[in-house]
Every structure is written in C-alpha cells, then in structure tokens.
Length: 91
Image (cartoon, rainbow, N blue to C red; front, side, top):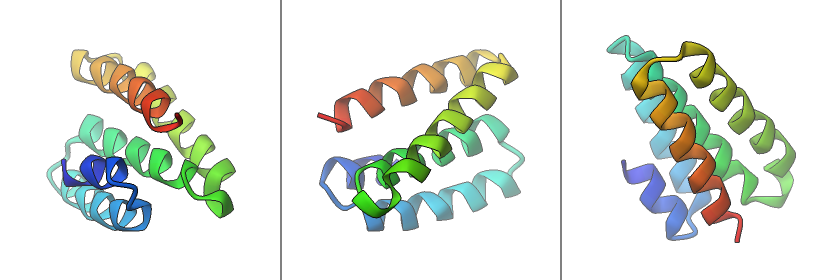
C-alpha cells in the first residue's frame, strides 16, 4: 500500500490522500476489513501531525476496535499490523 510507504517517508498529507482513495476503492469493492485497515493507517498518518494528533489517535483506535469486533482472520491480522505500525511510526 502506497499510503504506508508515504507515512514511512514522512509525507503524512500525501499518505492521507492516498489512503483516502484506497478507502473509497475498498468500500466500493465491499472489502470491510481492508477499508478499516486503510482507515487505521489514516489515523496513524494523522497522529504524526501536531494539529491532528488527537483525532488521529481516536481514528486509529476506532479502526482497531472495529477490526477486532469483526473477528475474521484478516481483521485480526490488520488490527495487529496497525498496532505494530503505530508503535514503529511513533518513534
């Protein structure tokens, strides 16, 4: 996913734009777990910008909670992936 690479490159705004496009495409394809994963990455990107940090944390937690509630193997994997990514990018 390009959005995650943009986060790693320190390009949070570009990451949000890319991930928002991904959310739209995942929704259209009815891929709820993938939609939530992309929304979680948007939250991570937003945590890296001072003005959106708190909202980003809430968005990330909402996505992780929804993935865990979903309970599918993909959803559980994505929830873990988001938690790990959030730790890595917060350093």
